[in-house]
Length: 156
Image (cartoon, rainbow, N blue to C red):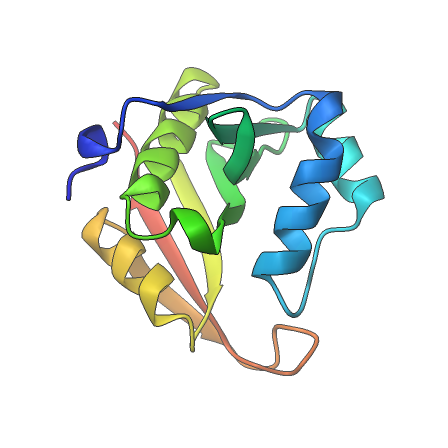
């Protein structure tokens, strides 16, 4: 499924401070390790070093993507991408990732990098399908000592 095929009733927008409860809930429901704290989520939503995009369906937050930026760096980092279990299979991860890439391009990034747990097969398939290539593996990257696969994609 192409990201443009995601049902039209799903709207992607910039996160707002009022989204914090839903963001924290989704973060905790999606990830077992290396979760972002409420304080970190607040920092990213309100700060200038990142963009947080949320996908809304029927007034409910069903996914988010967080892209971080470093001053004077042409590389953006996909810091987190989470889709609620109830919204999986809709192509929402693909659509949200494409929106995150567009956000990075708009801020002058020439590439996007990310890390993903080596046991997250669905995410790895998504990143590969979207043109990301593996450039490194880092053992004991996550707090449970699991390995991360590092991916990168050149942006137009």
